[in-house]
Each structure stands twice: as C-alpha cells, then as structure tokens.
Amino acid sequence: MANFLKDRQLFNVSLTTQSVADLSHAIDEFAAEMNVGIAPGDALAAIPSYIIRYDEGQGDRVFVSEFLLKKYRKAEVVERVVFTLDTPESLRSNRAVGAFIEVVFDSKNPNCFLTVSSDDEGWVDGKFARLSLQVQKLKNLNGIVRNAASDLLIQMMGVVICFLISLAVARKLSKLVLVENSFMLSFIFAFMLTANLWGYIQRQVVAYIAFIFPNISFIRDGRQYLHWISQAIVGAIIVYLLGLIFDRSIALFLSLSKGIFIAE
Image 1 (cartoon, one colour):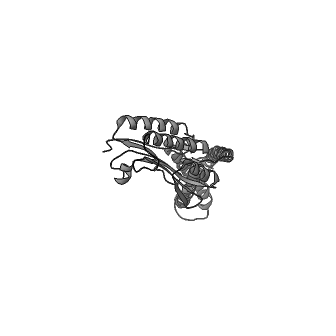
Image 2 (cartoon, rainbow, N blue to C red; image 1 turned 135 degrees about the vertical axis):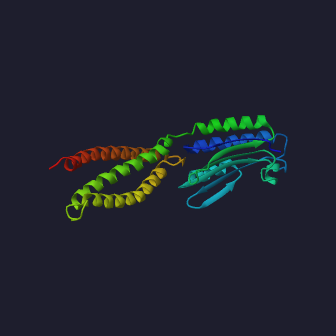
Image 3 (cartoon, rainbow, N blue to C red; image 1 turned 90 degrees about the horizontal axis):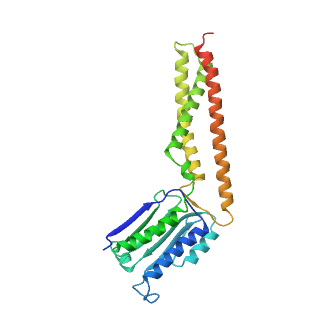
C-alpha cells in the first residue's frame, strides 16, 4: 500500500523548453531505475507519460518525452503540461497502492501541484527532493503582482478615485439641485454610481493583470524575450498610472478641499 506521500502546490512558475526537457528527462530516469531487469513492454514495467493541452482545446498524451518536446515547441499557446510516472499497481488501483509521480502545470487552473507517493519512504523523499529543487529553479517574480496586497491597492485606488470624482460632480450638481442638503445628496448619488462602475472595471483590471502575470507561464524558444518585454512594459505602465493617479488625486483633493471647507 502507498503509505507515504509528499506534495506541494506550485505557484509563480515559468516553464521554458529547456525546463520541460529537464523535467521529462528526470521522469524518464526514474522510470529507467525502476525498470532495471525488466524487459521493455513488460507488464511489470513502470510507465512514464506526458500530457500537453495547447492551441485552444487540442490535447495529447504521449509516452515518449521527445514527442512532448516537439509538440511544446510547435504550439502557439500552451495551456497545460502534466508529467506522470505510474507503476502497474498504481494504474490498476487508481493510485490507491503502488508508486506514482505527478507534476501538473496549468495556466487556467490555480490548483497546480507536485505529488510523489510510494510504500518506500526513502524513494518518496529522494524523488520529491529532486523534483522540488528543479521546480524551485523555475520560480518567477509574478508573485509580486499576483497577491492580496495588489488587489487591495487596486480596490483602494478605486475608492479614492470614486470619492474625488464624486466630490467634483457633487460640487457642480448641487448648484443645479434646489433641495436641502443638495451637496450631500449629489455626492451620495455620484459615489454610488461610480463605485458600482468601478466594481466592473476592477474585475477587468485584475483579470488583465492575471493574464499578463499568470501563475504558470509557458515560454517557447524565440518567444521568451517577447514575454518578458511585454511584462516589463505592462509593469511600467501600471507603476506610471498609479503614480499619476496618486499625484492627480492629491492635487484634486487639495483643490476641492479649498473650495468646500473654506468659506467663500
């Protein structure tokens, strides 16, 4: 029975063609070690396999790492790559017994993981440590952008923008609304309107940032530089816009405060 299991979730990883080759070769080496003295194609042999999903819904499962690399290089867009190694026991028992390894990288699904299981604790520790080290080398800096603090910053900037716009609108609109507390009523109306609008805009902004800075990035030969350049450009634009919004917000706030709180 597979008594020992180690796993870890995978965050902020970039796979290049070379890293795909390195991981598949590691799986091939593990299979070769397990199959020493077993004839090729024997029913007792451990079986490495690789899954790749690419180009809007196309997918293949291959049993030779070179085929995986060919498909990875040719694909325009890669969505998922899975590395697996199973023994006959794990296949027959749906991994209830026997040894298996699975490494899942998926740009559409945040649940990406590395799992190693066997009834041999030393085998689990060794294989998990080697694969973890390889994956650790693939870490990128997308976590700087993909975190709760960034979402909070976007939300707070939205609140500030909505507040300042509402002040400006209320200042103009209150002169046209001839009712008691016209400024406050105009401000509340404008703030509710802009806040609901920002709720939609915020979702689009967060989705776009997640697209540019994905949890799992698949980079092919000749396209990695374009990928990094696009991230650098978007990052620079975000920093510039945040700085511009903050600067204009302070200026507008001071201007409006002078008009509101200082008696004319």
